[in-house]
Structure formats: structure tokens, C-alpha cells
Image 1: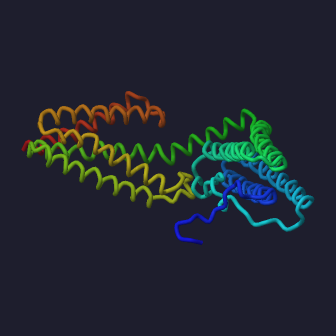
Image 2: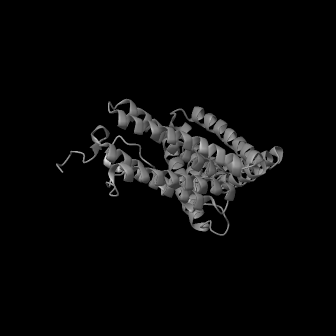
Image 3: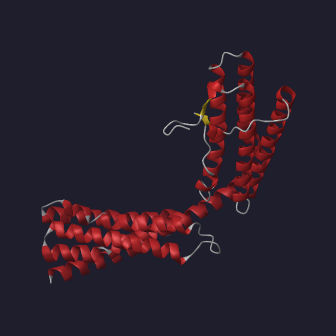
Length: 325
């Protein structure tokens, strides 16, 4: 292969036998992907796992029929050609990139798989002048369209209303444990813990740039610390809280944002303008925390607001007193 020149074949250059071989290998890959989805979901979402088990079985049946067609037209030796060998052919996202991303994401990925295949075959069929190839590609497009309907039919078969409600509750609980709880803890830590150092420096120096640098350092440092602490505290295997990496990212990012919210106003040169805006931002942050607690943690809003606002006010006052002294 000449450096810089792609080794991929153009779809237009494939023979009918190679197109059929490509369809066979694609069906094999998709069946494996569906099996992987089923295994990933089986423990928490057994009914949805059954849907993907049946979809994998259907893909294997299509593969068997394609192989029989190949044997009748071209013999037993199937050329080795896969998606990655053909320029412009639809790609499949590696399974490990969507692991633990939730039931809705897996279902959406499966739907996209079928739509991609259908669109590709339909487009390819319009670009060939060979009647036999055009017929073959049209049949493959129809088969992929049938897969989409099959997925809907299987979902209706396996997932009654009770099963859907149960899986929705499980998915919501997992979302809370993996993203909301660590993110909320990070937001509270970043918003409250950085109040004292930022406003202490602000009132001690009345230098907005110095205050911003201190706020930036405090926010980023707290975010890194919170993220690593959350990720290392629990691997999620026993508690069911999900991926430690995701929880660490949620906690770290929200901690940093919580601190940066009232540090960024100090990019404004005027001290009192920056300070007033920072105070307003603090007020918004604290009420946002109370709202999240009410929405996702079922904490009464007034109680959450009282706890957060009073705590934030005390930390704020401590920073102002220390800085003014």
C-alpha cells in the first residue's frame, strides 16, 4: 500500500459476490453486538435483554439465509470482506464505548444500527445499473427495514406496561446514583467551600485579578480532589452506584463549576461591580442546589433551601469577616 493512500475498496467496485459477503459479515457482527447488549442489560433489565436476544437470533437467521443464497449462486467459499474494508460503509461504534450508558442509549444505538444499514443499502441500490445487484441491494434494504419493525414488535412482546415502568424506575435510580448524587455533592462542595477563600481574598485585597486567580485555583483544585475522592471511594460493584469514572467526572466537573460561578465575576476590573455580581451568582447557585435536592432527592424545597442558604450564608460571612479583618 502506498503511504497516504487508503486501502479501502470503493463500494461501486465490489462484485455481487462481494456485496453478498459483506452483508453476511455485517449480519454476523450485528448479531454479536445484540448479544453483547443483552448480556449488558440482563441483570438490571431482563425484559429488554430478551428483546436483544431475539434480535440477535433474527440476525443469525438472516445470515443463514444469505449464506444459503451465496452457496447457490457462488459456491461455498465466501470472500473475506468486512465493513472496515469498504470506503463509505456505515461503521458500528465499539460496544465498550456505550457500556453502562443506560437502557435508553442502548435502545437508541440499536435503532441507529438498523437505520444506518437500511439507508446505506437504499442509497447503494440507486447507484448501480446492474439489475441483479440493484435487486440484491433492494432486498437487503427491505430486510433492514424489517429489522426495525421487528425490534418494535419484539419490544411490544417482551415489554408490557409493568415491565416498562419497572425498567424506567431502575434506569432513573441508576441515573440518580451515578450522575445526580455525585454531581450534587460536587456542586455543593464547590459552591459553598470556595465562598470563604474567594470573598476573604476579595475583601482583604480588593484586587479583582488576584481574587479571580485564587478562585480559579480553589475551584480547579477542589474539583480534582473531589473527583478523585468520589472515584476512589466506591467501585460501584456492591453499591450499584455505577461506574466510578462517571461518578468522579460528575463530582469533579460540578465542583469546579460551583466554584468558578462566583470566581468569574472577578474578571471585571471594578471591585464592587464584580462583588455584587458574584453575590448574585452565589444566590442563584444555592437556590439551584435546593431545587435539585427537591427534584431528584425528594427533599422538601423549603427545608433544602433553608439548609443550603443558611450554610452558604455562614460561610460567606466568615470569608467577608476574615477578609475585612
